[in-house]
Length: 527
Image (cartoon, rainbow, N blue to C red):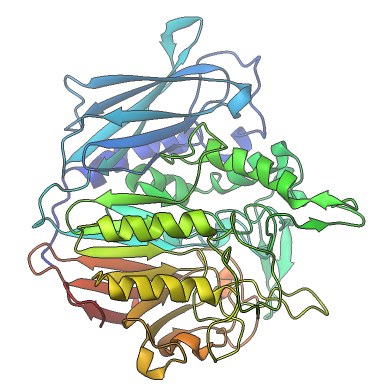
């Protein structure tokens, strides 16, 4: 892949983000805005862009009090003759967050933007602008595409540790100057309290930034909102958000570990007997919709999370939701299972959109892996959380739905499918081939796993032979819940060359060093 020009992105961030960082010291950010504050509105939580296309994008901000959101865009850092966009009124109903939709943007170009917050009673009174930038998707095939992906932030009690650079992996991802970041879920650990300190195996102490909302399990809407705010206390993440737009999906920890629709739990603190996970999911989904700029859910907690993201002629990203429509976790050995892990409607949607796609590469962004066995972890119950259940024979349970999808891809001769995921807190590359499989009616494909970003790392999961996976590469600790201070934090990078169409996947460690590389050729049904 040829070197990429950086049209002012780094320089604008050096100046404007430094000013933004001065506004965002954790001590200055209370859990809720103080409505009686004097002065002008402040955007101390930074800015984010999301779901950027060839001619549009979403921009997000949070205010410290009621304010009108205003976005200005420009082709240059000077903001000479900017375009102005009037966003929503930010108030308590959305936790003072808001998203503005930008449209009519030039394709394949660097867009500089700044967000101003205006006093709703006096529009002339605006706060200090907060700057960001993103590239729109290309309209021409010969433009290269690069993105990064990972997941799993602040899990297992490992939060923002400023002595090791906080969420330092985001700085390593930003250095690659990606077009976007695909977050594969577990953006928060709503069920994972963060204490001020935790002991490490060598006798040292891991020290966390703490907040009231992260001191206990999330139950209320305020708790879930506080979980999303917690991550924005990290300077590396705020810098990254201002430089790289996101494509965000969710998984279980946005609500509770291993949850599924219809589940009822509890029997004491913090979950009273008879707690319906569907009720918690409504609160979590609302907070999720408030804190990320997502085209289908921003400002609409009833909006769907699964969607297809078109990123020019080279790439379509099919963002799945393997949480909302699944059946109950179980031994997963049933011989008939139309609901599966996607639900019937989402499976129909995915088949339809895959068959319509004319992109060279079709990345299927799954929030859970296919052939890695992920037990539910409920004591005394042999239930499973993902697709695989450890039986290497013919498809059973949720595998039946995946088999149906893989058969469809083969028989429609859909080329260029690649599966990306996170969830299991280690990194690996699996090649699936019918010659090794119990189920043989599919074309070979690759699945790449990355993460965590800042959470406990875990040993490699066992493989299920139903779809014939061969684990070509893996890096994982030998023991469970290794802290971010000890390493084993990972992200992946995907480069698509605009000339040849080749897709290169690199699995990287938290400092950016490359662990594994695989080059895939365009136009093949299976490889």
